[in-house]
Length: 541
Image 1 (cartoon, rainbow, N blue to C red):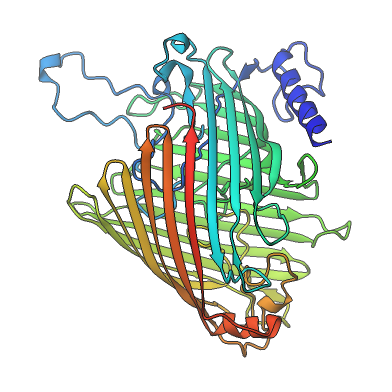
Image 2: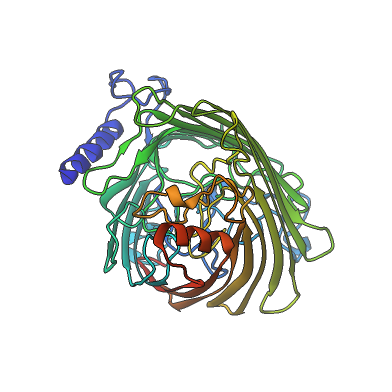
């Protein structure tokens, strides 16, 4: 059944591509795009490398869209400065684990640039194929309803095909994923298991110079996408596609982008319905939920600071009784950069949420701050300190819900063992990073975790494969200390197409975890251990 729906989905996209605007019926055009607009196809890609490898290839917009600034006509070639001229306003944040996946993904390559002679003229085709296998050892996993040692093996295959340029302004992309998990003592869930799925199938209208050029000569395009999409925004904390997890967050709807990453400003807006990951059937969207938002990027001063004002919202229809009625709004701001004439970097974010949540008034907030220092050394060592506060519900009996809504964020930056999410937590952290060789990256840290409200829940505690009634003590008598953890990770590029990772995390349970384990299981564990070994293989350099 799943295979038949896959064929239908692919055929629908093919029909959209093959039908010209002049011939299309109202049902065959993308909603929100005038029929008089010319047709075209999209660029293909998505990444599979773990999230913060220092040696990972950093994908950028195509060079054709980012021409280098031209020298004045009177300046001779001999008089050109030795240092390269600035060609992009973009500056990557140095903060740990906050870098969104590239678009197209990192495992995707343009065939003309693969070095294979047979493909040298295929500059209109982007292709990627990626396979990942990860072994995990999870001892006393606090997410589970049993204190035991588990040895899951997770397999994930992704493939990507994208078309651009040749039919501009029409472009398109299709991305396939097969995610499976074996050898676990617990039932399958859609965090690990989602076989034979299309995670991206979209068409795009791409107008290269629609908004002119910036002062560096980079084109300001307009990009309009419609279909199924997976992407990450800002620092991934509220919108991420979960590169670490075996399965992927994705959505169906529309996205419009003004400008590109290289420009001094960029604006991105979307209206989407989340895709429900179904273990046994082809995935479909949640028709009773809308996730929408807009992100602005101001990079004019990016040598010092990049500003990202943004807004996200969630509207959920509860009339059918299967989900709660919710209407949540989240205005936010992020600022990151490097202090001038120093090696000190910073990343600050603040988010406020309001609206209605299941009959209660919503009032929640979060702020995050990271400061780092990178030493002048060939190994590029960086030491950083991070602190975040994410509100929890103060009183379960009043008419105000203070629990922060993390939308579709990425959990791993909070803790490498997937215990923490962006909800009801106070989390200071120290992190170190260095690269002793161009093919080796090492990082690790020490973290402490408290509940922001001792009367609200610890989301992931005892929440996998069991009702989560025991992850909250509304009296507050179980305490507020969740625990502390120490972790380390080594990334090694074994071969040009093979990346390997070894990681370990030791979590020391705090009073809240122990008290709730005692209440739920009748036994407690002082700590838990998480070790993993991962190999990722892609098809093209």
